[in-house]
Length: 352
Image (spheres, rainbow, N blue to C red):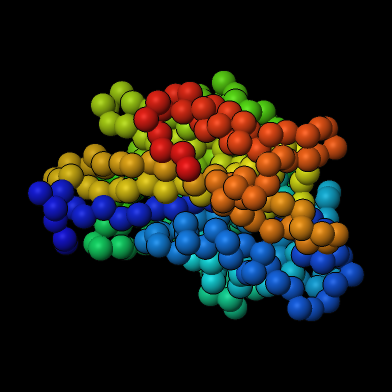
């Protein structure tokens, strides 16, 4: 194991928010081929490809055109988005979200089949009981990293009796049970680092709710080192949590939309989060998390039925204003306001 001054050489973690594919993003619901999703996200590839481990929230089933492409409220997207995410540098996607059953159980099975065909690992929803009991553990430079994913929302949909294992959801799994699992992973040294995807909070709220903060503190105390939040579709300020054991967890309450067809100022602004993670000592459980950075992104409607993702800092250089149905906003002012809001709890957070 590589060491730097007695500390394991850090790995770089990257994470993006919601991949929520309305038909207008990729050419319309009647489109059958020649999807260019990889090109639409290529401008931010540099922020993801350099990481050792990259995570995305795949909020749209990708059962493909055989199931019929569809948008809100029951999404289904072409499987090409999985290929595009993999080529972008994404190493694993979370399926635990409120749209996981938009195409029913069979649509979930087909989504997983497509992901397996692509070679893109997934977590949070599963094809079998055995699959659900298989922890997703990555070994990078001898640092073992476990990815877990849960959703608190399912859009009122229920899992079939006897198949509650299909989705990791708080509707069927207690907070106590999740906490026990986190403790077990650390106690039995299954992993050194636990990264927990949580689909929680209230849509379009620019601040985390009391419930988000309560859950984050509970899971931090149980052993989660990094908590990645999804669902609000807007950026929420991150926070360090010091728990009763004296260790700290990094919580990104919401990473906003990465690519979607949602229109509205803050719904079009997301981020690529990056962190450096290392283990100071092989004897103790504590993890060192350093240099959190938010590289802001902006989803722009290029033309009818085409949306592209840009590094926000680069986009505002060529675009003085952001124009939405609600008004005309000065791009640089919005960029500065978002940057300032993100540093509400972490004053030295790097935002670019």
